[in-house]
Image 1 (cartoon, rainbow over the protein chains, first blue to last red):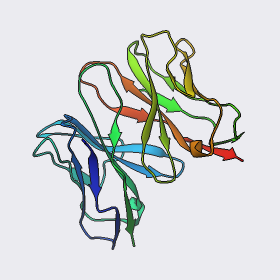
Image 2 (image 1 turned 90 degrees about the vertical axis):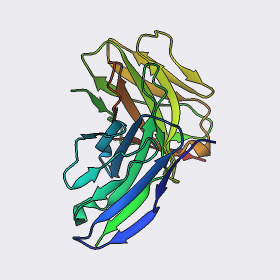
Image 3 (image 1 turned 45 degrees about the vertical axis):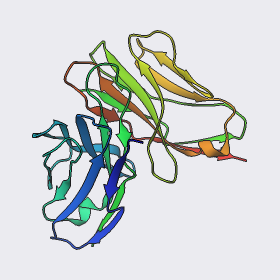
Length: 114
Length: 116
């Protein structure tokens, strides 16, 4: 069965370190998204990609970067982790075109920055 | 820019009863899609139901149904015969129907408690 996976599921790091969160999908979806979830804010879009070599900033992109070298993967990098980036991170994918069927989500990564 | 508002941070319902979660949105577009997602304590986001704006008929999935009022920009979720497993965060989401635009905009969520 097709799926979307994230790794690691839990991560503790120190302020200033570079951290990369992995996202891998086997749906063959063109569109991939990274969100962070914080209490009272719902899901906020960090970055998204509509295809290989395409990346776009979301509403809370400062301090984060992504790259898309193939269809399956969209890793999220925190260049220099800050305590404000402690959050739960979700990766999602969706198909292009009309008839939106919704996004498929990974299980999430809980990141703690000390 | 589009926005999605869920004005009820928390709701409670007695088991077997019916509850309605509210969602309003703001858009100038005529073609779009609306969704309700469920997030149980496991954190996994699960699609509950979807509605296409051009369809007047309200979507239904088993015990879950929506009341879609396009003119009022309202998209509420009704859960009938509530079960303990329905306890979760529920998020309303919007996606534009404009070609080439695939971002989803989420509300802040409503936490549903189901009382035994």
